[in-house]
Amino acid sequence: MLFVADSAKERIIEVLNSENKSLTDYFVRVSVTSGGCSGLSYKLDFDNDLKPTDQVFEDKGIRMVTDLRSFLYVHNTILEFSGGLEGKGFYFSNPNASRTCACGESFSV
Image (tube, rainbow, N blue to C red; front, side, top):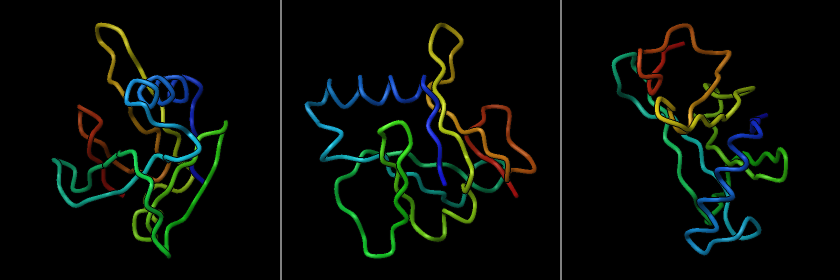
């Protein structure tokens, strides 16, 4: 399962509305790629093309989709959002990460 914090839900809705996209047509795609100072990096996109092996989750009315490989790294992860002057933007609270870099954009397991 993937989870969405209230702060991330609000920001996702704002961004979709600003791009004239709807929650019924689009979802949040979460993936993990090789790279970053800790070895693995998160990738976050809006998408409307489901692939046959995608894993689909819904939390607080937000659909989140991930491929099988990425799901191994992000199960039980919470997508969060922090705004303001020192805000991080979107970030992940990942219980599977054994180490993260200072910027929070890469991790290792």
